[in-house]
Image 1 (tube, rainbow, N blue to C red):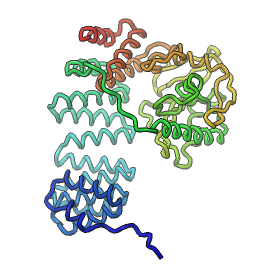
Image 2 (cartoon, rainbow, N blue to C red):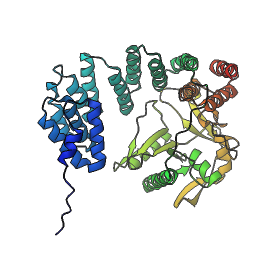
Image 3 (cartoon, one colour):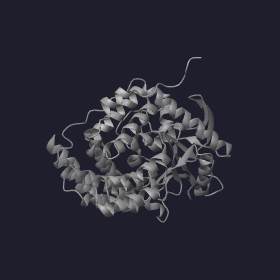
Image 4 (spheres, rainbow, N blue to C red):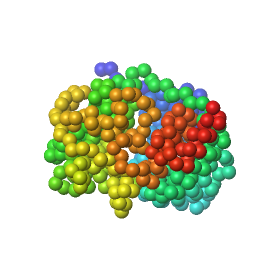
Length: 447
């Protein structure tokens, strides 16, 4: 009978690509080449054999560890990492790699503890950035803010400090320090402009052929699975915001949309109780994961589809005292006037089929879309409904700080037109806004 075993590793490849004495970068490049040419298992066998034949070669052992991590052989990786003290008597190399393994296993607390131990041996900007990323996984804004500030203190490079300042604006916002976020945003935008960030729009990233169709299928799959779980729990999710806009205007998902927007109508239970029921329905089998709720939103949460990477943004509506309906995002401990709230007229829901899925939508879709987008039939790639939704009540510091954060990120990404549009939308909300007024004059002076 013919053998169906995969071809074994070729010794000559080991001789060509995994010589002892090469740098870490060179050995990692060799591993990647073997991975592509001979397959993961063969590449692992080759690098393991090379490392065992050269027990004092640090770079080969790190390449061996990387191969185990790529194949998610975490127990074997842990045993190998425990032996890394031979290359670094301080134990820092072992701790850093144990943190990587814990992070891959989803044990973020252990990953943080290991990195903290490594930082006591020798502080590192790279490891501080990893701690910042772990704060996002843990949903701990206070830690993210602290670690971003610590990272900024470790570097004197102007560009690195600007990058970390952008990160710190984000963490100040998530820690609900809206005033601090706005103050730092003003300084950061000035620094970015001084560095030439808005001389021209950055070139858009090229999309691989067929990417849109693949992405749309992921959106469709996430929508169908989320609806199935929510409706099985007796809930009535319906399309809103970007999902409803694509349906009504384009008869398609919005291009490059990264989330599915759904709402739950008001009922007898408080909005937070309805949202808790929805979370239980979505997350009961591990398919969906509730993302950290750093701002303590009471009636808004985001869920990640672990199968597709698509997010589901879910808001629970509630009745207001005037016969209307409130949506948006209330935050625990803050009065309504300080939160981002949208007031909608009472609506009815109808059942319809779209994209091969049967779901609810508002009977008067035009009215709800006008609440979010105003003239929703006119395409405006830079309209930001988080800042400019006509149905939004007021312009609280929470929304202003969010707008400042978006502006910082647009300037950092060299998206000139988007940054100008954001500043104009802030100005429309408040003609006396300091950052918007200053920024627009700066842009005019450099035009």
